[in-house]
Length: 212
Image (cartoon, rainbow, N blue to C red; front, side):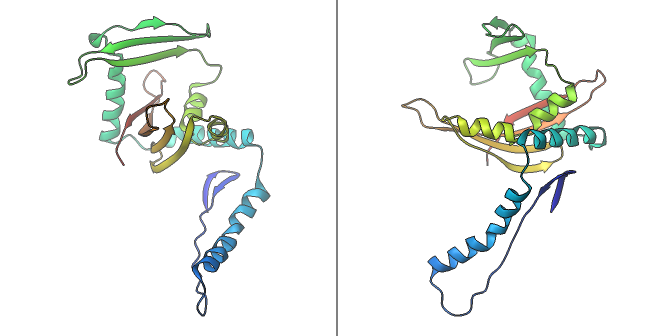
């Protein structure tokens, strides 16, 4: 039993069953599935509103931020690479159309990357009615109840899960999106890192593609 928040627990249940005599695989598989249903009963018994659970998990991360260990050298390098996306020497951002007056979209093409003719870099700027810590915690929870509900309602979102929790500051996550024909569905696996606060009180959420 792993504590994720005061009222949120991750449970892992492992069981080995030794059946006497010769039992067909079909029946054995059925018995194993039946014994594992205790986990489903616990989920159903303690289930609460997803919105409340998501908020508790965000608050747990917020309370932990100032106790988090420093970034490793590799994690620091990733943050630096992400911050370089705003490098003016690689071209200036031009504003593009946005449907919300509170959100501004920008785009540029980075032609300094070797082997790439046109690499598009997008940027969005907005004022969000929440603290920087709250926004970071919302972004960090890859499989929150809210995000998984949106995933299930989106026909083009095929999978979404956490591949590995590397540390309190780093996770590897996955999502697979359905691409219009004749293209095949595209899987995205990314390494995510959060850092901060820096001397200006800013936090950063950075990610890059990885191979698994």
